[in-house]
Structure formats: structure tokens, C-alpha cells
Image (cartoon, rainbow over all chains, first blue to last red; front, side, top):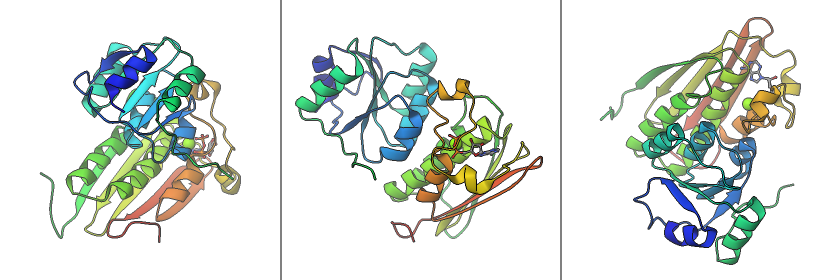
Length: 118
Length: 150
Ligand SMILES: Nc1ncnc2c1ncn2[C@@H]1O[C@H](COP(=O)(O)OP(=O)(O)O)[C@@H](O)[C@H]1O
Ligand SMILES: [Mg+2]
């Protein structure tokens, strides 16, 4: 699924790397805890999160996450957008809450590649 | 281009204390170097995870420190050290879920107590040395030649 499709499904806005509307995303994870993303999200190319700070973008970079969606109407500030541009990471936002945003994307065919743990 | 076949790239990074705005820059830089050198992406990811967790620990717990990175043809050696408070009980610190991170750090999405075990999981070799009152040293080796942990 392309970034442009994701924006339509989530009724979202794009804030950084606006030229990457054709970037293909096939899997995602939803997390507010960056520690969890570091420990459990090895193969996902997009992150949905309610947390908003520059470290979210740095974590995404380390994990090869190519796009971040901020849920519940949170919008990245200009420093965060600049950092994301520098790292080539797409930033989007949606007014939808986490569960609904993830559910809509899952229904539309995005998978979560995380395995059950334990 | 920093490609020096048969030779070593040596890097030194200062990791400032409590400066969350640039925490991760050293790891990001190493990641770029490895990408330029054409290292296997999954090895780069494991290296990034291990180094970033260690770098964050120095920022959050270690009052800042230094990262020395040596890239050889077949491996990367990462040495991250600080002169912070040190770790009283290393076995306890290694346990998943154990953390002394303050609320301010948790609010930023970190401090779940999984960093050290995550370094161990992703590194090919990992050694942690610490002396209370003196500081902490983390040694990480990543092999570049083959994928998968040895
Ligand atoms: N460089 C360090 N200096 C002092 N204490 C450290 C250092 N690194 C780790 N620790 C201690 O070990 C604990 C566990 O570390 P870690 O597994 O990375 O979890 P977290 O960073 O989420 O607390 C920390 O909460 C801290 O008490
Ligand atoms: Mg940690």
C-alpha cells in the first residue's frame, strides 16, 4: 500500500518527506513505548504512535522504519519535521485514535509482522 | 567516500549527558558508514539497535560518555564508556524489565528495562563492565562477513 493510500484511509496529513507519496508500506506496528519498538519490531516498515518527540524519529531510523503516523491529532513540530527530512522518514498525522487507525489499515491489507512472544 | 579496503575506519563520538535532542547521533553516523560500505542490511539493523541502546544508556544513566568505533573489514568493534554512577548489580540490571529510569524518561517512551538484554540479543559479542562510583563500559562486536549470530 502506498503512502497516498494510507493518508486516504486515515484521513491524514503529511508533514515530512511529502515527495514520498508512492513509497510502498506492507507492514506496521503500533506502540507508544519506543523500548518495545526497539525490542519487538524488527521487520515493520511503518510505526503508528501516540508519542511525539524527536526520539521517535531516531528510533524509526534505527529500526529501518520508513514512515511514522502520529495518532489522536498530534502534530510534529518543525524540528521533528526537519529531522525526519534529514533521515528520509515520512511523517503523517491522523485525528483517529490508535486502535481505529491500526484497525483500518489492517483491514485494508497492512500486516503486522510481529510474532507472538513467549 | 570513507571506503578503505583492508584498513580501519576509526571514529570517536562524544555523547552528551541528558541531551535527548541529539541522543542517537553517534549510532546514526555509524549506521551511515556501514550503509556506505555496503554491509548487509540486517547486520546494520542489529548493529544500530545494539549501539543505540548503549548510547541511550549513557545519556539516560551514565551522565554522558564516549563511543569509540573501529570498523575492520570483517567486523565492527564498538566501545561505549562513561564515568557515571556505575551499576551496583549487573545481573539485576540485565534482567528484562529492571530499570531505574526516571518518569521523565518513561514519558519519552524509554526506560522499560529492556535495553541491556536487547544489546545482548543483537550483538555478536557483548561485554558489560561496571564499577559503582566509577562508571560503565560496554563492548560490542559485530561481524560483517556472515549474517546471523554466531
Ligand atoms: N551506562 C549506565 N550507567 C549506569 N547505569 C546503567 C547504565 N546502563 C544501564 N544502567 C542500569 O541498568 C538498568 C537497565 O538498563 P536497560 O536494560 O538499558 O534499561 P533502561 O535503560 O530502560 O532502564 C538501568 O535502568 C540502569 O539502572
Ligand atoms: Mg536502556
